[in-house]
Length: 195
Image (cartoon, rainbow, N blue to C red; front, top):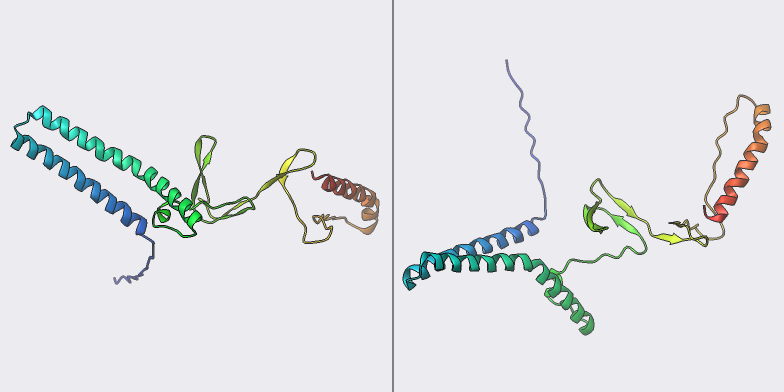
């Protein structure tokens, strides 16, 4: 009984720079924690401090490390925005502006091709999680209605209206012709009103 084994080799290319930065930051924080722990015990043993004093000093140092880590994203954002402001005034950029997240304007619409978070009424929304999603700007009509505006390709052309009619014979179609004309007139009037 012989078995055939197929081997498939798959190559994966991925941008791991974000992961590398996060891992480097985690390593720095862990080293900072280790240094704080070592310094606290060394100071306690060499300085004749009580164990309670050593733990208090260690707690303060760990609190400082945690606060620095928590404020780092805010510091990067503020520094990036400040760098962009100065870069806009002076005409050049700065290294700090590279740390700020890019702001993509969608006032004229656009397409989101990758999963992205956005604020949604005090919560966090996710778009693009199942593939590309379109962003369509809304416009308020003369009657106050809000919706997506249709724009033709030049001239005064409107949307196409298609009627598919299935009848057993031509006389049946002629009898329904008046009804079809009325439906077409109503659809055209609604289109002109923007409904």
